[in-house]
Amino acid sequence: MLPHLTRPRDGHPARTPDVVVGATGTGIAAWYRLDPYEQPSWACPWCTLRHTAGATARARAYLPAHRVWCPRHACWSTGGPRPRLLDTRGLPELADVYKSHRRLLRRPNANTAYTWAQAIVTRWYDHRLYLTGRWQARGRRLAAFNPDHTTTQGSSWELTARPVIIHPETVTLARVLARTRLPATPRPDRHPAAGAFLEHTAHTLRSGRRAPGPDDLLRSWIRHHTRP
Image (cartoon, rainbow, N blue to C red; front, side):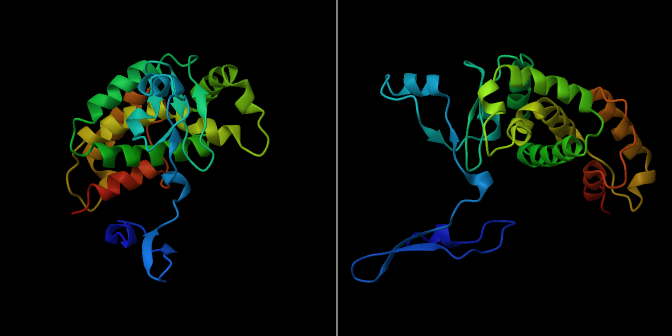
């Protein structure tokens, strides 16, 4: 049994592992079933062909967030229990976003900032806040290059496409969060630095909304980072 596979992960409760039992009745291996967000994605088929000298175009990989999009072939790899490959040739803005994401990774807090930004922007998208018109237009451009995916039975195109559609704003917000340092204060909603941060964020995202609502996760980020 591999000990590190049976330890609870940070932020996740301990789970009962699946155990393989040998002929002697002794457990010889144990692992956890992967949650949907932990499932491997399809690697870019054209890159896979190159790396395998043409032997195969199909391979799964555990891709970090900055590698789910292939800049060479404009291919986006979705995760989850049913990974797919999306054609993003209709979204040329992803090329600049890719470079921005790589620059973000130079910061020591890049992963934390990206996780917060992804949760914040996903909530905006799901609740149709702030940037809905932009995301709808981007979604139409993405759908035009993926007609087979938009009509697949038993799956939701909106959920499949969401990570791609919100990715530019996710990376932009993550870079803002990674650079921002707010002073400790018991009243962050009334602190001038918080107001200036919201103004800067809205300007950077080119969003007309300056004051997010009380349930907005961006305010949760402010409260988390201004605790005395």
